[in-house]
Image (cartoon, rainbow, N blue to C red):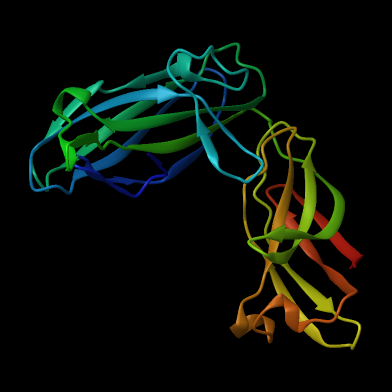
Length: 259
């Protein structure tokens, strides 16, 4: 079981970890110092293993954490990182402020580097859940995602298309964007939709990171209090979309028809 930051529960693993991510900016030669809060939410003492890892996003937007034996990713800055310790023992309900440092080399080039801090139960302390004669070990991991933007790196989004994409049996409206920059983008904004019957609704761009070189379908969501409709099927297609898509350092004026 792999979890994003928050809470993970298993036979012997109940941890709360915050924050979920860091988005850091640095210049060559900088030393960045951050703190991760780790709490043992179990009723028993816990021993955690802590390591750094490379990560990526899959086509569905899920985080992929790479195993320790995988070669360094081109985007990795794990060699720049220092973690406080690799093993941590916490009594029930105790909290640890866990220190992480990033030492950016003097010759680091402009661009974005990434890593994750992964907190897992120590294998030596894992109990097993019993299912009849079968014993199944239960474990978990929590990853804190870290972006490090060095120098003058910045995102640059290129509009590709608007479309309806199949998701859980529904056709969800999305804006397809490609990041031609050298840092991740997290686009946001609202878009006015006018359908074939002249009905209007405000759709909200669901913020989601787009990594450098990545093409991503960003959802246009319906908020009944803002949109004036309950669901996207309340609109009659084709639908004209107009609005401003924004991200750190850039904007795009959307004016397109979705069939």
